Length: 126
View (cartoon, rainbow, N blue to C red):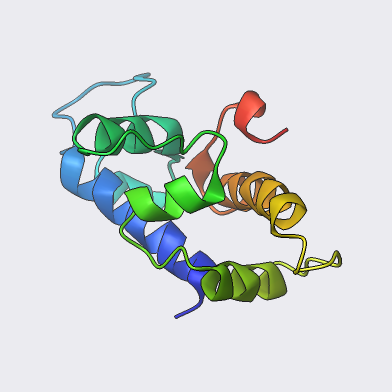
């Protein structure tokens, strides 16, 4: 599976596991469980990541750091993994400039999560 696919899978899996389907909550703003997610409703990415961060021993700044985001999801956050992610997402910059690449990666991951069924606040996509 691709690095981005692993990110999506980890977030969506945690969403489905953490949020059982409501018995009957019409108009609810909260994401439904796995059944509804499969039917097309959005996964609240911020809520899932916030909940994971609350249970993590390490204080990870997943809102700004691609490394911390990947660590929070228990994924390989090494430079080689991030370079692979950059390749998958068509990064055209210098992958040896890891600071610039990391900033770009975080933004692109949030944008791509939103494009793939994630509810991602605007401030995380800019």
